[in-house]
Amino acid sequence: MSVAVLGSGAFGTALAISLAGKQPVTLWSRNPVHAQAMTEARENTARLPGYPLPEAILVTSDLEQATQADTLLLAVPMQKLRAILAEHSALFDGHVLVACCKGIELTTGLGPVQVMNETVPSAKAALLTGPSFAQDIAAGLPTALTLACSDPNLCTKLQEQLTTANLRLYRTTDTAGAELGGALKNVMAIACGAVIGAGMGDSARAALMTRGYAEMQRMALACGAKPETLAGLSGFGDLTLTCSSELSRNYRLGLSIGRGEGFDPSVTVEGAATARAVDSKARDMNLDMPITHTVVGLLDHSLTIAQATAQLLARPLKEE
Image 1 (cartoon, rainbow, N blue to C red):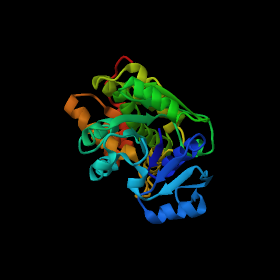
Image 2 (cartoon, one colour):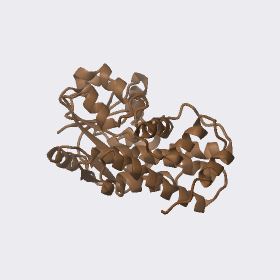
Image 3 (cartoon, rainbow, N blue to C red):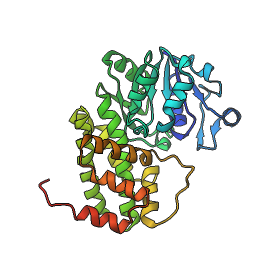
Image 4 (cartoon, helix red, strand yellow):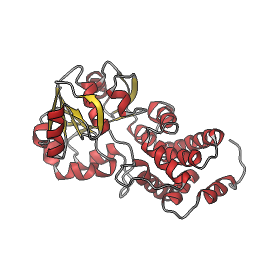
């Protein structure tokens, strides 16, 4: 099966670099100028500088050309996934679509696999998620990810196709668990960044990560996910990475909130929209999600850091 990566941000480019070590790869950019610049420089100087593009990568801005591949990796922002699929649905008919984004759609409360199933029902949907930074993948550093697909036979084939010398994939049929683990950990990363940015210390961050993980499990299990999925790479693994590194955009946003600093609005931070979507979903499901609710308050400036801290610490005492 041939493969194309749709989306020339840092993560999409890194995936293309890793996959090009074993097969030809098409890398699609929506922007023709950006595609031409990458073709000439053999590097994504705008989004992932310092990592050369192997000759096995064909860069194009022609979506019809890119969708000639059998397997399409959608490395686009979660909140733009539906629009791209709906606008070009005929080009995606019958393809294997692998979402490489993490989040919950703000308007519907759906995850990426659900959005793909809804917009292109003829396609076969899967999800690639887990603890990973683009720079690590592009540099050839060992990275383990979760590949989720409801069809176990297709999942096995994709696992073989997309595993590379530095990318090790573990498969699961629990798409709901993989979706929610990858989405919810971004919300917790914003919270942990705010804790460190406000100078509350590592002990407070550890407590927040732990209670945040409990919150992630609460919603995931209520949505039919398997607990072992949340304990794996797409849940606990991704939570650990994202809540402890400034390479995470969600964590950096939290840092800026905790420090009272501005944040570049042009930077895509999936956790911001996801926090609002999850907060609304939790109310509808009558689920207690105090950290998520607090993050929304910080994002909307209805809570200060001091108020958020007091609000969480004043919650009723309970068993763990």
